[in-house]
Image (cartoon, rainbow, N blue to C red; front, side, top):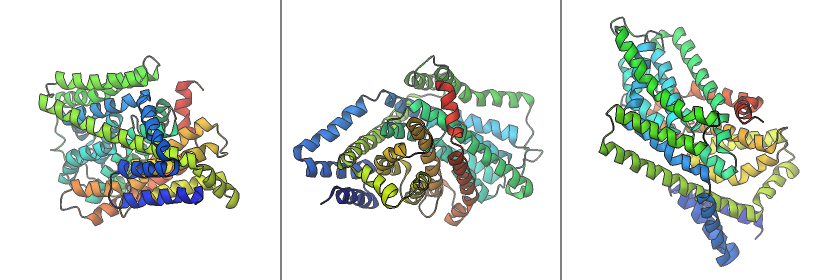
Length: 446
């Protein structure tokens, strides 16, 4: 059997295992282990060992549990709730103001957690009941929460970009900085859409009534201070890193410690909450480490087979596709896979093939910049795939958290305009790579 056929057999077997509902790391790592032993005998056991050592020596991985812990502390101690209360009071008088505040809340939650699930959970439990109670259109509401929560995997500290950095051997700090401008741009596009749509049709997002807006100046000031606290936590973490005073790992430790101290000072941290945050952090961190380990092992086998060169030859020599056509086909494949896989599964499945291929494409940029830029493209495409029927990840999360009055049909119908906005953002970043590359080039002085 040729190496190309072995690679195809491995890929199809892995997809079949994933479709049966097996855990991602088990399906990917199991196929990699079987293939390694079948191809190289007992010597194939060196592949997972080498991957494990590479994983353990990857110093930036220490940021993963730190940021996850920080996000859980801010969520479980209800410090994040204060942000929404602030937006509720300060932006309620504007048509669609609470929906705009929800997008801003999601951006800030993303900047404190790095997981889209956290934004979805907070949005569905805090924002959704308030918006529905104030007669916001249910399709507008569900679309806002899904779109806003998707920012969690793009705005730093994105956990998904940490995973991409490990597989692509790209610097995490530059990837995070590359996600800042596209993430804020996309949030701004969501806000403009909500503002324009609610101005044209105020019934979609009615402003608060006079009675609901009755808040004293002292109350507004108190809520403003409470809402600024999460921003201060984020600033204490990112300002030293951006100025070069601390490393990425040190900044993540500062963020986790500052969040813990803030919860203690506000008397919201209990022993039960601390144990819950630590257990959840351990569970999520271990899950990602197993996935990274499986991806590295699978990638090593693929690299040994020469599958990457075979696919490059297929696209460039046999099909004669241009570099940009190859890039567009890659993005389309992510959209298709996103209908039944989550972001980490998509990345570990195709990264061993796509990342080396992207680095070799002649896109008019240095290979290092291409990998940074492509990480942002992958993340935006994953955000779109999260919300694409029939099996978008966020669609089912929304269904699980929404009240019975919101049907699956409503959820499907709510995401269309936001998906179109995200596609426009993807096209802009593809057309103008400096949207993603400007900030990392500025900070790292290239």
